[in-house]
Image 1 (spheres, rainbow, N blue to C red):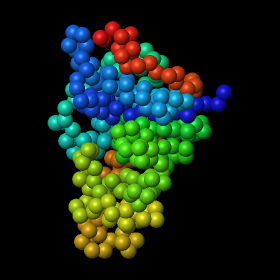
Image 2 (cartoon, helix red, strand yellow):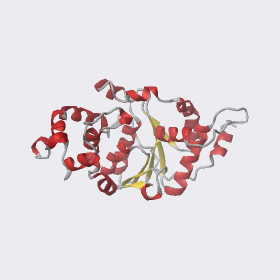
Image 3 (tube, one colour):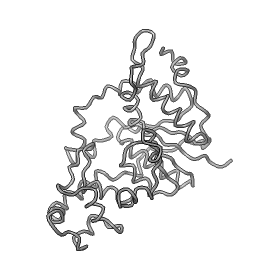
Image 4 (cartoon, helix red, strand yellow):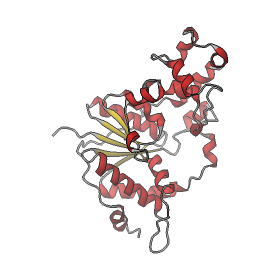
Amino acid sequence: MPAAPVLLVDGHHLLYRAAFGFPARITSRKGHDLTGTFGFLALLRKAHRTYAHDHQVVVAFDGEYGSAQRASADPNYKADRAEADHSPVAFLADIKRGLEEVGVAWTEIDTAEGDDVLATLTRQACEADRAVLVMSGDKDLYQLLAFPRTRLLNTASSAARRFVSAADVVDRHGVRPHQWPDYRALTGDPADSIPGIRGVGPATAGRLLAGGLALEDLPASGRLAGKSGERVGVHLADALAWRELIRLDHKVDGCQLPGSADPTPELPTAATVLERLRLW
């Protein structure tokens, strides 16, 4: 039997969507908040049934010290997130128990961000000639579309934009997936506290990088005209440093796809899993 395609799930992205995306809180009979756990399992089940019923499901979570290396290179990296509401993390233990209960593999490397784990698993799957579907709304994962037979799935998007391919990135942003770190370094990424270069928006960044250029190609390209071009030249060293923060690591130590390559059986309802875990 050929190896199944892989559905790789951005665990923390789905966790926060589950915890904050429901119109009302879901509680146990004793009044305990189960929204994050219920929502995570329900959204995962729906995505698997609807878009990837023949895939093997693997969930990747952020490690506790995953951002430490990037933060040591730039103390501002993700600094704004310190003020965010991180209460959904309290649901993680039960979510992991739920995944184990239904036979879904999950992985968490203490010193790695989940995006880097997803990148490593994508590379491994592609080297094994397996198609990959990455479930997330994080645009930095556009980089993974440089791998063959890889697409992104964002179930929170409209039907027309739910799946993202390499061609979609080119059509929408004017750059190829492998150029995404260069593009983001120019335009900035508020979610990761990367400021970008003032005056360089998506259209300008797409024009500067058109044809596959990288940041280091710009000084000799003849494209750094006008005030925005002058600012790029002045702040190019900053942009190169930001690009390194955005680039994903495809070779995380200790990260490995499950030994089995069989499709994940249909998942039970979230309510059923919570009953099995005696959380109701």
